Image 1: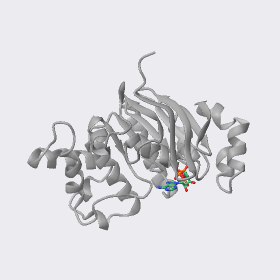
Image 2: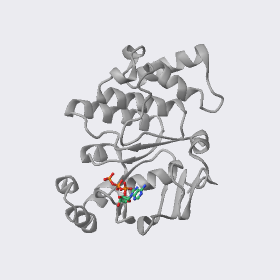
Image 3: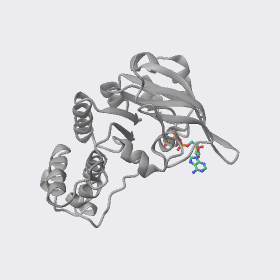
Image 4: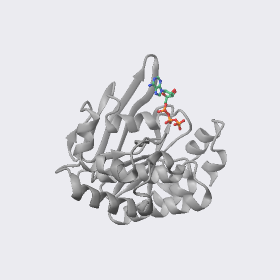
Length: 249
Ligand SMILES: Nc1ncnc2c1ncn2[C@@H]1O[C@H](COP(=O)(O)OP(=O)(O)OP(=O)(O)O)[C@@H](O)[C@H]1O
């Protein structure tokens, strides 16, 4: 098999006495959409931060396209082709949507500026369903539209790997279906995605494979249906207060 696009090898992160990620290993191949699951506090966001470079590991390494990226600053990792969205949406509230996306386009390899950036920004906004709102300030957008904008900003980097941290959380049922369709379209175009997600309908619809964490460690890695019926996974979810129904979905 070809070299995985993303390799996570024996990755650990300590915060003082707390081991948030504990010897985590898994791979993501190009074109896969992989779910990173686990109960609250199991280390998923910390793992995403270790991949995107927001945090440096205490031990282990992350490799991207065959190259070690752990320890590099996040902007350099982004330029290599790793883009992300955040659990709490981060957009430039005072700027309009077009400029928000254009700011991302300036940072892609061979950055776009001026008219080319404005045109590309408009296309990306249309892609995520925000074409008509291009001139609106980001702060005036609804919650789902801010999420769409954040996705457009991530796509502006022309990533090879997209990291989505609970991108589908907090949406109503109609918005959720729209959000799933949008990610499915990216997948069908060949985008590689690693997504932290608690919404099990989305995990079933989008992820061919899931990695499940508990207390910082990997407890399962395999086909989504198999993993979600694994007794260790169900027990991990039942052991926390949340997601009991989700684990059974
Ligand atoms: N910067 C930090 N400093 C200290 N402890 C942290 C820090 N970030 C995370 N932690 C701790 O690390 C553990 C894992 O947190 P993390 O946010 O990665 O879990 P998670 O699986 O993403 O949870 P959730 O599903 O609730 O977002 C938790 O105990 C958390 O309190």
